[in-house]
Length: 66
Image (cartoon, rainbow, N blue to C red):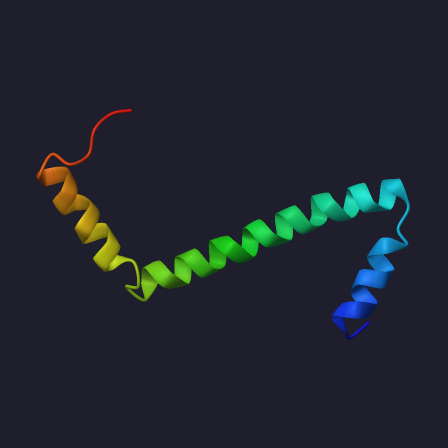
């Protein structure tokens, strides 16, 4: 299974129970991948500007409780 089309075909042939299990597995897989990317971005300083801008808005009173 090397192409996206092959993967799509295989998924479309799953039973209801297999599809449910796949969804659970994929949600966890996707969340872990997102977490790894986020941690890499933090470590590389890619979010520093956003964090500083957010803190500046907080200091200026531009953030309010909702």
